[in-house]
Length: 523
Image (cartoon, rainbow, N blue to C red):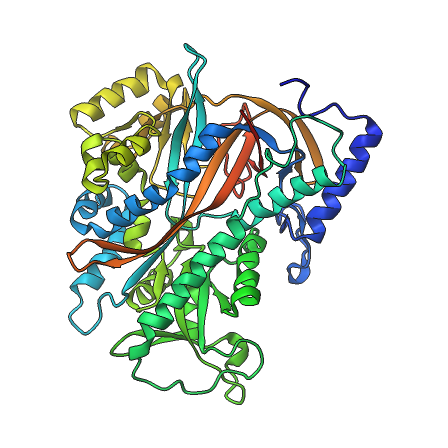
């Protein structure tokens, strides 16, 4: 780089920049709810604070950025095929289910539905994935060359797409408005527009349209009442399944607002515990009908058929504290609404699947085009099982003898679950050896460090940071006539750059470890 980046700021420049930054974030909904520990009194959830964000966009190499986006449709189809291959996925899942209670309970919902003989079972025709493949740029210290490495693949509740778009817009505004001091690194070509908000909403809208056009026409019932005359006229809607007290609600709300304003689609929100309070099935087709809380009054009742169930909750054990939540998940899975994701698609995102797909033979089962398979395979880091197979026994040896090179990952989403480096041997000794196969051992990726300033909770932290690039995808598929998968929509859908201090091991924004960033592309 010709000049230092980010540029050195005088105190006046910093004051001007941070004022512009904060006002833009608040004015454009780039916010989260504050932690209850910081603001125990937050009546009616009326308080919000700027989301944790970098003050400048972070440098990211252009070639890996372009390649990660280019191969996303192939990754979308790969995981659609994995989710569809019940025999292959089931063999892996049942192995995990014996030692991982959460995986076991998800699989049990699936098997109960498959075995149903009372007219139940699965009734959906299509599946929807709003998914994200996460990467880091790996620098080989021996050759000083860089390459793209996949960290993980997320098939449920892939968050921060809307706020990632807002951060990209924020950084572009600060550049265009002159709030940034002059620097040769920032330019129109180096600051790509991020369309994650629009593209993810478009994926949901396409699933909604697919349901109305190809699923709903055979409905054989009459809604018990007519929707209100104001607002969207359709009697269909999308339901978001969310966590109670969600701090990241605004990332979800922006998708909702976009769906309503651009597409005229009603969006309802409810938690797993409240699903049965407001919804019911119509047999024999198992249409999912929803009565909004405001419409429970018989004088104002309105009932809507749900086209898409979008899970922003349900990805971890904490979302199922009682049997009621599992009953609600079964109820939703049983309906013919399009699920994002289905239980099988959620299970396809397990770390075990990622580990097995890192074998060329397994990957070839799902990706027949050798050139595409090679491009996907080239992004895989070294991943090992921790079972008693020869590869698993080798991994156990590595975990105890060379832990500094590895990270231990359970079958969990949401951040804050991994075990790093020298903590691995102690952790493995602390748990039952029979549970070790529920973890995978992954080679640590060594990303290049850059300088930036992180703004979090009104505080400014400056130093070395590393970035993790997430690429979103939207994909809709159904059973093909040949027993395979028929993909009816498949698209890359924008990006998320999460940045953390270079000394931090975890990067989850919602878990409190990282922040949202955007890319300034460098050649």
